[in-house]
Length: 58
Image 1 (spheres, rainbow, N blue to C red):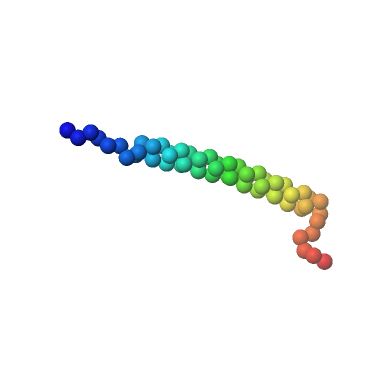
Image 2: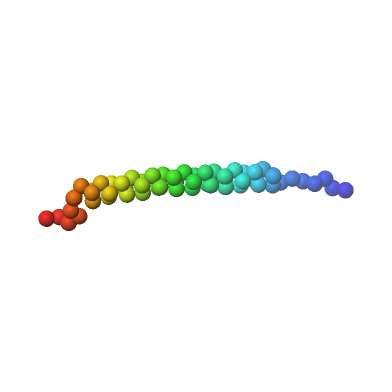
């Protein structure tokens, strides 16, 4: 009976899992940051509109 030889498949699987977890975390924080920017942009539009600023240049 030959001994089973491990070619580091468990380490590769663990690295891949950690990589996917890292990507998932980064994607989540990018969406949060994007949401903050969009909310800030929305409030700036509301303030400009409510203060009577014109969108056209005269």
